[in-house]
Length: 113
Length: 109
Image 1 (cartoon, each protein chain N blue to C red):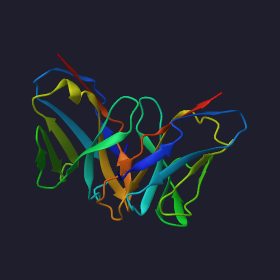
Image 2 (cartoon, rainbow over the protein chains, first blue to last red):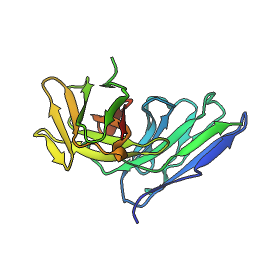
Image 3 (cartoon, chains in turn yellow, red):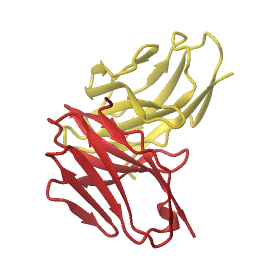
Image 4 (spheres, rainbow over the protein chains, first blue to last red):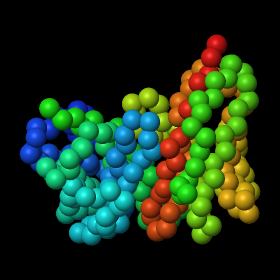
């Protein structure tokens, strides 16, 4: 089945630690995205990538980093510089073109220990 | 002003009721529009795209008013399973989408 796989489903971070969230898609989509959702809030864009080896900052990129070495994969690292990392992290992908909807993985819940 | 604004609700309706949500957007250059559904603690899922001429998918009807910059979603004959948060989504330029904070719908028996 085609889809987007995020792992792990739940993740705990210790103070001063970097953690990496995985996102893999087999939809052959060019564009991939990372969002953060806080309780009762909308989705906020962290980073996005429209093509391999290229990515752009979204609205809340500080304290996060990404890479796009393969079309299928877009991992997100939450660094120790992100002081309030507790949130629901969602990865999405889409075809190229502004009229394409995005399709989401089932998310990773990150909490601080 | 937020790029996409929605009434947060909650809308509490009985089964079988018709309910409508509106959403306004600020970017007059936006060209694509969507409604997503998000269940509690789950990922958003595409409900339907919104076309200029309006479109219908079973009990769901979406309409776009470009002049007033708003989008609507009408749900007829509400089911218990329709209970969820409905997200209004607007293209924000390039491949970027801007998500509203969502409207909560609770359908009661």
